[in-house]
Image (cartoon, rainbow, N blue to C red; front, top):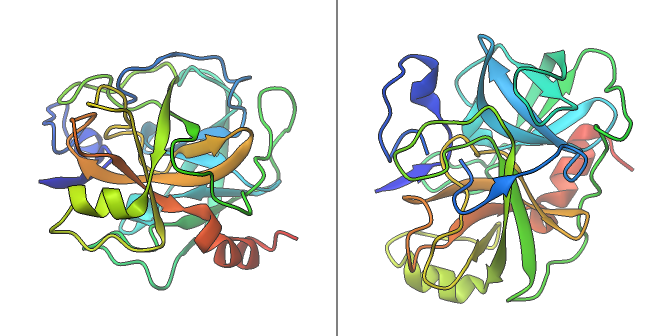
Length: 245
């Protein structure tokens, strides 16, 4: 079963399953200074998705994270979900062509009240203008589950995976309609991946944002790469809606 990597059930129950709640698998705890663009998208005081600071007032996340819920806050400037600074979200925009069945165009942006207090622990991440080549090492981070079927963590984790060619990724998800608005990443034979609770979080190449955590089959399973919304192909929409020059 394919599952978006968002911990929806964590909002209403402490019980979770592998199809509902899995964080970064095969990763390590990291300081926020390593990924200062990373934020936690929260509702009711609880983390449920990741996001990236893309301007002084806007966060990029996954459309499936905010398609239903209407009240959000952003926690920024911390690797510990019990610290940092909270910002109220006052506006959301979901990609008009977002397909909730196939996760195509799975991006959305959130505007906070005021501006982020930028510094060493909170920085704007540049949007990539070109895709990394197949095999390139990219980093994904988040507060999601560390094992499939696990629970979320309060401490930020990250891991490095490699870009998988889209045609190869399509052969893995042969029954799914993967589009050019997606990018895949994994390691040979599995073991490293994003997981539920990491949805909406950043996939970076160097210090440029190349992907948004979207979906996968389980977490870190062999032969099933993680699938991300492709920032390069969706960049025009992101910059226009967030008025980024």
